[in-house]
Picture 1 (cartoon, rainbow, N blue to C red):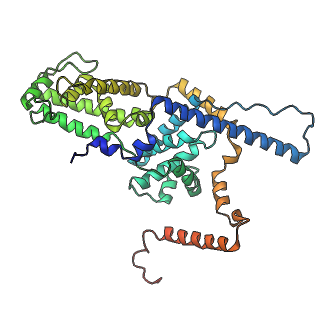
Picture 2 (cartoon, rainbow, N blue to C red):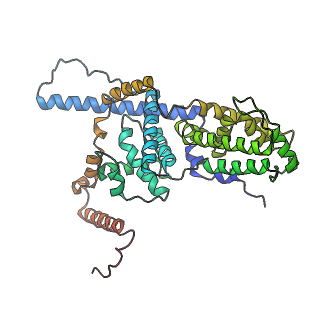
Picture 3 (cartoon, rainbow, N blue to C red):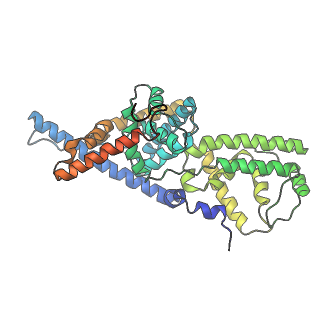
Length: 390
């Protein structure tokens, strides 16, 4: 019976099946979302204007047609989303939540099928981070979470949550590249100290690998070769630190998670940090010659270029000015029907929302809702020391 590989297991994940794209399909999806949102915004604003004119009895029968709305482009939407991804990372670091990578991916996934013109990222950001604390088993009470956010109520965090989970297609698993990097780091250290093992078809001995590593070309931008195993170990540690930082920033702020697998992402981060070392690692896994290795190296090269092109986590003055322009433009092209998420959430829970239904159905739904709320309150059981309601 053939053994399952890591790649086989990854292909069964929801991340591969639902959230993996090529560049063309990703752009097409975002364009479709943008066009649909723009149509919704124009229709809602025109309807709002007509209602205001009718209510004030100032409608001009011979008036000019409604003014065209200048909506955000796909590129402008992406710049805004990336900015709020950076804000999410900063807030998570401030609160010492180890869930910023997952929260950022939740935001990026949500805005594949939703537009900032419909739901502002500023309103979705707290909900994404709070959801990530739950899905990543880093329990934080809602009260404690809200206390860290100025001018934010518990309802502000909870109201968008169902919209967010819908946008995520109720799939919360995110496969990150960080563990892969740590595994590769340990393998390289073992090879550098003469204790590593080659790939199944390579055939080189641990001593041969150790000598090859000492003779590697200098790291990117360097001009000095390592002269001993100790210097090689230091080089590996330096590359590991740089690659780790890339995974914390560039990998999250680009489309790497949508376009590449976790293994490809961490290897590409190592390419950016120290290309000769990364090439050596890949060589250790393949026989010579290999038909697969050139294809892999090409893929890693394109992913590395994507990571290099990442927006900065600390935008310059010109970028801040551009973001302010986009946000000002967004203020004029938001869908007025979707602005008050808290109010919408309350309306959906209101009894009158079920007008037209049979009375028995309404009562049944009310009982189910009350039972669900009771179960939610008691999900962790009664308070310690309390028995039989006493």
